[in-house]
Image (cartoon, rainbow, N blue to C red; front, top):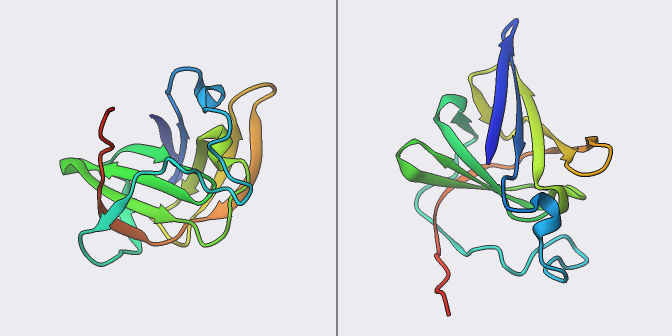
Length: 143
């Protein structure tokens, strides 16, 4: 994942985009169900209580899993799963979003904006974040 950001007058703006080969077109056909959930989202085991915010300086990577789920990797290789309270249409397809915050942390009160990665680009819609649940992600075994 690439994260681009800058601070202007106390406002942090960031754009997060997938770097997977082929971008959003690299998704296998048929992996997204009609309700926006992907079948290949790794299972996550909670490792502590959910938190409202995570520090921006600690965010190392984000993985958009589907229209409902974003995993954030922070310093120390700690993962937080953010399950959005409402479906964020096309997030799982585009796998790119931006956010703006005046704080030094990303919180469950913040709004993300889906960014179109193909064609004309640009914003696709905005969605609220959920709480940040610290998790251990289940690694899939290679067959």
